[in-house]
Length: 284
Image (cartoon, rainbow, N blue to C red):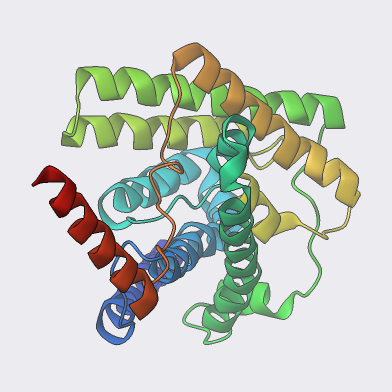
């Protein structure tokens, strides 16, 4: 089996596992889709789906170069456009939404905690698959317990690269949405640009464009401090996201998630009945 074939099996496995988990949530969680519990479970699954395939990017880069990375990221992003749903899988809109609406802070912390947990587990799932050894290269990756940062430039330069990439990505998304709304061309343009920009910047920062993916792959790796990692891969993309919202218009994806409404007790129902009776008498 060739390396790219082993990688395809890996990606396919990641998406199949995500779909199985979504089916399990729909089948075994006795709560409506709008409940906070279901939303957090879907967020966990979506973040796993976003993060786990990224652990194979280095293998593709070493064996197929930048063009291989372009094709890989384009295919993965195109698959995500059709398969990922009911989640955000990025802390950027969460943070900017909290800045606009402080009342959603508690819910934002829940979602962020779920994303971080899923990012942590994604590396374990990737290592588990690689340990199966469908290709010798994957076995080498599984046996290597030390990682090094993808940052090969100064912190300020790396932060600028990550921030500009996020800003450009949001601009392309806006243009594609305006011209090819809800069509396959919109998905193709967004996915192709993601692959293109990743290939351009992967040798400088890894060009993740998503803080949670960057932390899943490189947090606690050798070569950069925790503070440096947060500055390059978190602070800069979040600032770029906020600037894009200010310039291009507010994106309320996170605001659309509703909190689970508390169940009404018997006393509350009685109170509502009394109010209706009183209102009926006044009207008479």
